[in-house]
Image 1 (cartoon, rainbow, N blue to C red):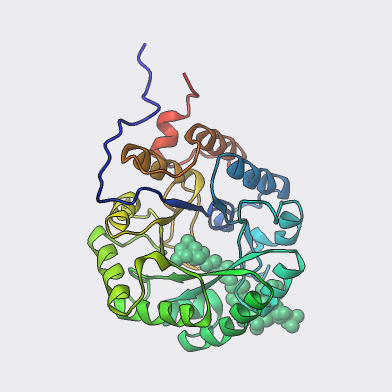
Image 2: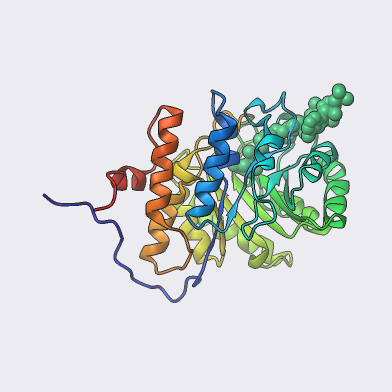
Length: 315
Ligand code: HMG
Ligand code: MG
């Protein structure tokens, strides 16, 4: 009987980065979109498993309004059971000062704000506007840094918006640079609804470079709605991006953008990076076992092709 290969053949392309940081968002972006409530115990175990699988950063939850995202209303209970002082950063989303207060009280050392590149999504996701979102984030970033926390900043709808259509890269750069000027350490550029294609990725990196922002400040965050996430991740590598967001088993979406489905699956990304000989430090078998365990809790299989191919277990 033949067995499916558990590792790809490796062909190193010297024009690509040698090492990539995988920023795991499954416990946050993945679970915020679940129709049912995932028990706190399962969320905590998910984060523990992801850390044990070697993920270098594991986003844990969100301190957003519990009425807006009831799926993550147990944020304080989740982080109370995590090792926030450990070697693996466990960032949490905070939209405003109330969210920051809750995160700091809970002992969080890494937070992320999340802006929109478009007016409509700023209204829908943050009950705000393009300008007002920056007024909201200004004191959050300042106070977080004064408290010694690192601040990442997301920009959503960087490649297209379900209400406004294609998004001008200039608009993304404007919002992104405002966030860096406020003091964010890294920008994660989100294809929230997964409509982007590969050449757009390089153009966006070029647009930031032309405005004076180097690629080392940029991460990319792809959703797989149209099956483009892995191709876009490859385009990001070609453009020199060395931090890629991904979600275990391809969980994910955004409750305020109905056309958003799952994120780039971490397993699919790891398989590609392995084939390209790019270091990442993640144990693929442990990740697949985690997705299979999670699928048991969610009652449906992972959409990841790599999880499907490997979920028979080693050997
Ligand atoms: P609002 O209703 O305008 O809030 O919501 P407000 O400032 O008017 O306050 C109203 C009440 O809510 C007040 O209480 C506040 O204290 C309370 P009251 O005085 O009436 O008793 N409140 C809070 N309570 C707990 N935690 C908080 C909080 N803030 C206010 N943080 C708000 C504005 C921003 C809070 C709301 O719109 C919100 O929570 N939005 C979050 C939506 C969300 O989580 N979306 C998904 C994450 S983004 C994403 O997935 C995209 C990403 O993955 C990248 C990509 O894919 O592109 C990151
Ligand atoms: Mg997302």
